[in-house]
Image (cartoon, rainbow, N blue to C red):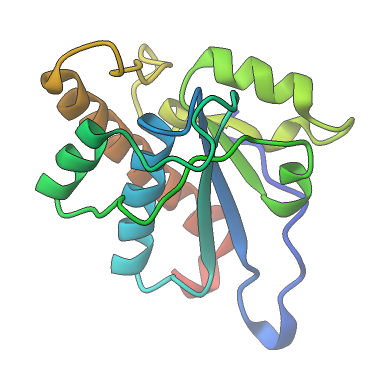
Length: 179
């Protein structure tokens, strides 16, 4: 799936790069997807692409809507220089397929939920984060919610690998002249 190219990016005005919009999706939008949003946003900022690549996160379920990320996710991210405190959980909707070019699932269950939600013809916007990590044997970012703190460290590492690969993919596919 990592090779699919989004078709919803607007044409760039006056030679400027088009905005690329990325939505990370997990179950409740309190552990994995907010971590991915924070990590990816940091990578985008470090690359000087804040005005070009926009990011958000959402959950497939609505249990935590309006809540901040899990305190363990926030603590792990903070230790690694990523601030998640301003994020609030929300639920993914079919309208997100109009608003985002990439809907990036944390695991195959989320991928299937997104494919069911996708309007006809927009399934190519759904991707697995780990498909960008360069390890074809690992497809899912595990849910750390019911485990210990060490699980959040492992998940952060996986997400960081996937986000680095995703950014490289976006730069190659959408921003070649500006990379």
